[in-house]
Amino acid sequence: MRYAFAILMFLFAASSLFADQSDSVNVSVTPTISLALDYDLQFRTAYYSNIDYTSAKRKSADIFSQYLNLNVIGKFDKRIEMSAKIASYGFSGKDDNAFAMPYKDKDFSFFLETAFLKFKTEKDFSFPYTIYIGKQEFHYGSGLVVDTNNTGLLGAEATVELSKFLIIDMFASKVPNENFNFYGVNFNFDSLIEFTICQERNNSGFLYKKGLSTKYSENPSNKIEIEYDNKTFYDLRIASVGEKYDYAVEAAQQKGYLSKDNAQKIDYDAYMFSLNGAWHGEVLKKDANANILFTYSGAKGENCFSPTFAKRYNGLQRIGYGALFAANTTDSFVVIPDGYYGINTLGFSFGICPLNAVSAGIAYFLFSASDAPADAGDAGFAKIYGAKADLGKEFDFFVKYKYKHYFDVIFDFALYMPPSKADKVFANTDSSYLFQLGIISRF
Image (cartoon, rainbow, N blue to C red; front, side, top):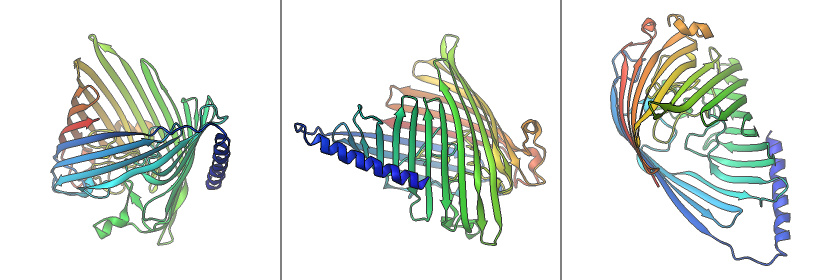
C-alpha cells in the first residue's frame, strides 16, 4: 500500500511537470490571488454529577471550556490553494483524566491544527486528481475507523477521479513525536459505497487508549508499555441521503497483532457492525426528524475492535453516542472499570422545530459490552445480539436556538443510569447527570 502511494505521487509529479511545460507556450496570464478568513468559536459550561465509576466516591465536576479556530485560505489560481488553521483550546475547572483530549494544551495557547497545500488538475484532464501536502485532517465514512479529531496529521493525500462513478483516495501520515505510521486507501463508488483499507503501525513502545498515548499519562500505573501494535482495517460502508429517508450500513474487520513486553502476543480478529436510519418530515405541521442507531463491536478480551483514530472529539469536547456517556465502538467518556471490551449501542432520537429558529429533541440509548468481567451481571435485552453484560442506559434532552448560519445556543440535559447488577465491578452505581450550555459562533 505504501509503495503504491509513492508510485502514484511520482506519476502525479511527472504529469504536472508536463502540464506546466505545455502551459508555458500559451499566452501568459496574470495570476489571480484571493484570501479568505473564517473562524469558529465554541464555548460551553457543564456540570457532571459523576464521571468515574472506578471510584467509590462520586466524582462531580463543573467546568468551562472553549475552542477557537482561525482558518486562512489563499487561492493562487484555479489549481493551487493553501490552507492554514490556527486553533486554541482552553479548559477551566477541576481537571480529571476523563477530560483528556488530543490537543496540545488546555491553557488557551494557540497551536497549528492544519496547514497544507492543495493542488488540482484542470477540469478537462483525463483523470482529474487533487493532491494535499502538509498537516491535514483525514476522515472517511462516518469516522468509525478514520478520523483525526480536529488535530491534523502531517502527511500526503491524493484523490483521483477515475470516472464519474469511482474516486480513489490515498493517504500516508505519521503521528507527531512517535514511531507510528498511519496510511490507507479509500474507494468511493458513486457516493453510495465506500471501501477503505488502512493500517496502523505503532512502534512507539506505548499503547493508545481513547486515541491518546498512555506514554504521557501523569499516573505511572496508566502507562501501558508494548513492543508493537499492528492493526489493519477493512471497512465497507453503504449510505444514501434522500429528501425523506437516510440510511447508512457499515461493517469493518480488524486484523493484525499486539506484542507486549512480557512476550505475550494477541492476534486481532475483531469486527464491527453499524446501522443508522433517519426520517425527515412533518409532525403537527412542524419540521421533525427521527433517527435509529445500532452498533455492535465484537470482542474477546483484548482481541477487540479498537481503531486508534476513530471519531471521539470535536475540538471542544468528547463526543459519541449519548451526550454524557459519549460512546463509540471502543470506549466512552465516562470512566468505567477495566475488563469491559466492545461497546454496543441501541439508540433512538426524535427532534422537532416548534418555533422558527428553535428546535428540541430527546434521545434514548441502551449500552452493552461484548466481553466483560465475570461479576458484571446479566446483559438483559442485549443478550439478543450477543452482548455479555449491560453497560447502562442514557436519556437526553436538548433545546437549540439557531440564528441563521452564524450563531447557535444549545442546552443539553443528560441522565446516565449504570447497570445496577454490576455493583461488584462498578465502584459505585449512582446515576450521573449532565447540565450543559453551549454557544457556537462562526463567520
